[in-house]
Amino acid sequence: MSFPPVRRLGPDDLKRCVALSVDRGWSPERAKWSLLLAASEVFGADAPDGRGLAGAVVLTRWAADYAAVGMMLVAARYGRLGLGRALMEHVLHAAGDAATVTLFATDMGRPLYEKLGFAAVRRNVSFVGRFRSSPAASPAGSPGSVRPAAQADLPAILALDRAAFGADRGQILTRLPALADQVAVFAAGGPAGPGSAGPGIAGYGAAWRVAPALTVIGPLVAPDGEAAKRLIEALAARAPTPVRLDLDPDRKELPGWAHARGLEPAGRTVVMARGELTPRGTPGRLFTPISVALA
Image 1 (spheres, helix red, strand yellow):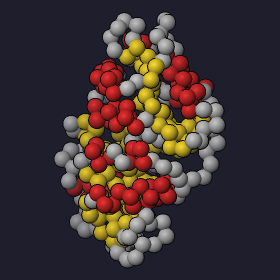
Image 2 (image 1 turned 120 degrees about the vertical axis):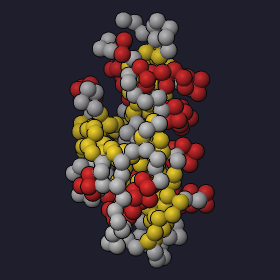
Image 3 (image 1 turned 90 degrees about the vertical axis):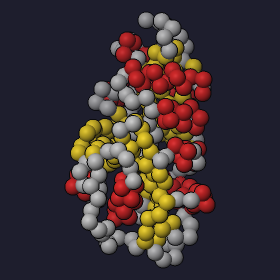
Image 4 (image 1 turned 45 degrees about the horizontal axis):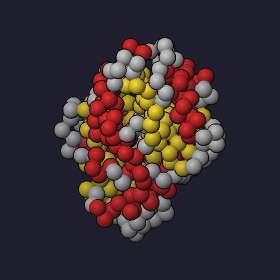
């Protein structure tokens, strides 16, 4: 089948993007699409039958040589007709040959991504459920306390995130307060130490609704696993719905603890990279992604 040329999508395409998610059985995630259309590069092909989009994909640039691909969707009626590959080839061309590109791959998408030169980097498991708080926070790990973030904390949060991630995610994070239900910071008990971004702020996390009945906790940056747990405890305690954590199952800090707090493995993906994945930032401080659309 011949599809219209892939084009850059804009805010006027929000309803079409939402409808495409619903077509594939995803939650509408109108707020997320609005964020991506404003802060990322969204590409799509119009449906030949005139009914919205045949497919779409999102490119988010973190640096000149580093980008993420996500939300690769093809309408069910146009599946297995080559549109997915065409969208991926278009977005990789837009990213540039010199850029390392990462993504979260499902089992269904992984064969295509491997054909396009992506290789598995690590595993990811989505833990979902009603979070059960512990009787008391563990005293181990970095001393400090969790509090709601204030507008004045944003520069420190951006600097902390840049140091941990190894690239500037400001185009997303500056918009996060408008999207998130909650943003919290981990305020260290003493003077700012190595790796902290500002006076006392050593970690942060956000919780935002991706569907009427599900809250995602992410991004989450913390100095250690105990501080990460305390941020999660605080955010989950105020979440009115079940929560979701996207975690690396090969890291010891959080998966077992999350399971003990009532969260069950609900989905598995693989983080894949195309290009040279050079060391950046301090990966040990990154506990959850902003979203699986933003590897």
